[in-house]
Length: 193
Figure 1: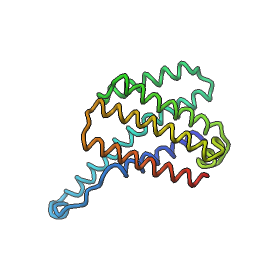
Figure 2: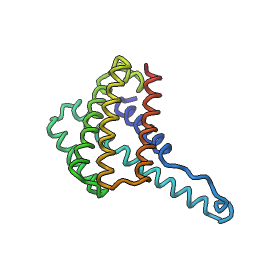
Figure 3: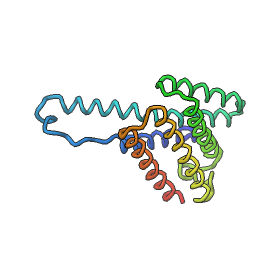
Figure 4: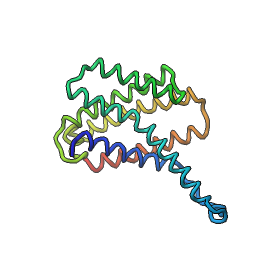
């Protein structure tokens, strides 16, 4: 399988897993059994939320994978960076979330991801775990990348809270996402090294 597709598929799988862990599933109530169609409506509502959350989770990752591939193909770094900034600004504006601080925080995450994906694209291996092992060579180096990425993602979260205002619901979603990411990344580290 082509490395680009392998990386993208792995990130999409992680996005779905994180999303499922973040979207708290309420237990079914008696109304789901009594009112015809209630189960289907709830199922569709949750499915829509899952798709939306996954799309938002994947936006910076997809842009970073595309940028890493463009750089590997010899495209100008300044042009790629400018395109990333413009696309990220447009995305944040479309969500009514644009602030200079949030843009800078998102771009910092994307930059770390571009560097990570570039390493994977340049590594040899037939699986994502083999690519990670070849690219980072040691648990400590990969953990260093994860630590930097986690810190950058925390900056995005802080900027998001500053834009939206602190609320119990937002804090709970951010905390759940951070927990899911930590669990999945720990699992990857354990399986690779």
